[in-house]
Length: 435
Image (cartoon, rainbow, N blue to C red):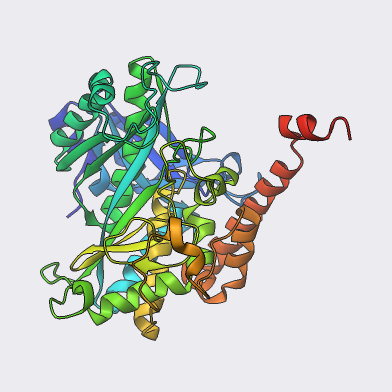
């Protein structure tokens, strides 16, 4: 049963609840509610003006009521008198269909109808910048190949260890932290979980990383490509599907190719089938396409895909199967909405299972060196507009994600693209001033 938030707060010394929902652009929106009011808020929800956030609503719409999900409550390890709790967005006592967490919960219910319980893990990468955000925080972090740099990770030990200690305290079972392939870039990993719990943790993780970095006088960013020439920040997703009781991995088959069962291959087939449209969700910003279509970086590789291919344990493809019973989708980046990323993976994979989709030929070559030899493999979108057009063309995926959500997302993202196109950049001046 869901916990009684008022009782839980008293037991844990919580004075305030941060009732939070995530909008279409991944922005986290919250109200700080005193514990004395949480009883009423648990029933009625905290009220928001939906138009004031990135949802397709107008000032004339009724209040958006964020009803807390008690099972998601997390006491802030760095400020224990406050607890964060994810909320279901409602309006006039009905779920708001375009709200990202609602989209994911509906797809979890759809998967359950087919006897599927999806579990995922995420690998969020991020940069620790100086307070102004103008450069990396560590002036000595300058190596050409900085990945796993032991000195660099220890110079940011206070930040990384504090975050990891909090994850240990919360029972997330973190298992490794490292300096990543770009200067100033880090990755932290914790144990996989049911897809909604992973999305909630991912959302909280971004909030926690930014908060701890600010506490230490720095700024953290999950921006996909903050610096030209450096490796961008991905958010790889590891995906497996289980029986509803959680005891049997439906993707595992020791006798099958790479240990991936027929059902696992079909789920992968759905990912491959919808990949170009998927990018509109997993790579949701203008900047995203400077990561997946980047030229070679100073380290020698982008570690990001640009072609729809899959492989075994090979990091140069969009999907790799590193071991039996799971696969890794390397397409998503740091800007991905934690809820929509999981939802679109679930939607594409569920369609693949239902239609017995074939993932196509497996390739084991180095795609960065020999990718030009692969014929007929679709290229990923070159920019956000191309991705939005691919998503709009994919009628089945739009329906799986929900027509109201899809219409709202496309509308607001096209507005974002148009805003970008009306922006005048330094590049234009430098390259066309004298024409």
